[in-house]
Amino acid sequence: MRRRLLSASSAGVLAVGGLLTAVPGQAQAAPPGDRTVTATLFERPFSAVAEECTTTLGPAGYGYVEVSPATEHIRGEQWWTSYQPVSYRIAGRLGSRTDFENMVSTCGAAGVRVIADAVVNHMTAGSGTGTGGTEYTKYGYPGSYQDADFHGCRQDINDYTSRDNVQNCELLGLADLDTGSDRVQSTIAAHLDDLRSMGVAGFRIDAAKHMSAEDLAGIKAKMTRDPGFWVSEVIHGDGEAVQPEEYTGLGDVDEFRYGRHLKSAFQGGNLGSLRSVGDGKLDGGSARTFVDNWDTERNGSTLSYRDGAAHTLASIFLLAHPYGAPNVYSGYEFSDRDAGPPGGDAGWTGTHARPEITGMVGFRNAVRDAELTHWWADGDAVAFGRGERGFVALNNGDSELSRTFTTSLPAGTYCDVADEAADGCARTVEVAGDGTAQVAVPAHGAVALHVGAEES
Image 1: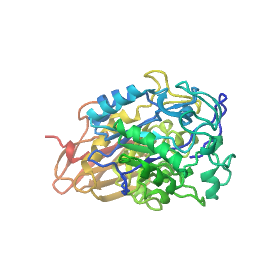
Image 2 (image 1 turned 135 degrees about the horizontal axis):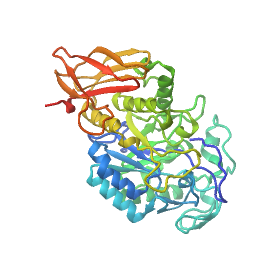
Image 3 (image 1 turned 90 degrees about the vertical axis):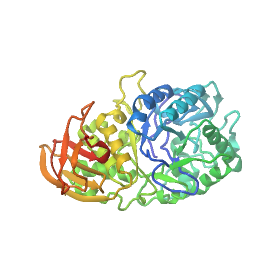
Image 4 (image 1 turned 45 degrees about the vertical axis):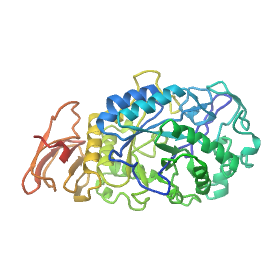
């Protein structure tokens, strides 16, 4: 992803967006298994992620958790220092190698597998001493890379219509690795193999757009272990030389147009446009979808936690609609866009743990691949079914929406899993024998029903 250059210490630039890889030879939009929702816990310490797996992610039914880069990085309090690796040792602010291994094991015991954010396009923008004590220069990293391992174009990317410029020059001044080199590919492959040896399920490949798909395929081929799940961060730009579709042969691709579409719909009053939300985007079998991430919440291209109810409703839609594989982003509050993570328990948005979101994770697991049915939309409101397994209604308006909806659910009394009540079944809906239901949807709220939440 393109980010502006930030002033920092002598090391300083900000880092780049990310990506992930899928099972070799397979491009599916969800990790394998029955629990397909990912939570990204941005900049959370590994010990805290382990706790979240046990207390929240596992019980809620999340299948995967994506964590921020584990590698040794430049020093500094800004969030983006994590995206300037100094070595591939696990020695950053989020924890030690032991912390990382304990997290993978603890999360696995809770039924949640770990996706590692892999920063392999570049190293740093300067010189200094890393968080693990490694002394480095921009083109010199003891034990890994030296000057010859970097591309010869040592100027910033300035032309996104040029493939050569995008993939061989420097992103925001960061030393750009020659990922076409056998030596570089082998070094990166060994790093990914090491992470797989600790039990990670796969990778988000940061700044994949700035490496050719052929180079990434070469890295995967040099791994001695199955690469696992793989998703590439490739931001779509109209008229640009490098496009997301080029990377679907490697695995899944983060679909940035999806989040932009949600922002337009929820802020523009036309939720009906979301019926075919996948039109003009990646095939749903290759798209990883999200409402926001750490880059987009800072550049304003998507909704964010600051948008309150609209952000929550968009997250509910993300988990309810069948297009793509949903990734729930959970970061922290900030006023300074460069600010690093909070030092304690306060300040985190906790999006992944909100009752209406965890309820919708259960919804996603219950409806699985059921077809989209009974679509209804009217300005700020939309409702649809998921075959005979689920039904959801969203109201982005300022007043309650009350009407009779047609569903395909079996007759019965259902708990509303999108209710924000923390415990129990605070709101129920009756579905009649003909599939109809009288539903009152609160202003700026939602109602969601599924067969796994029928009252006995």
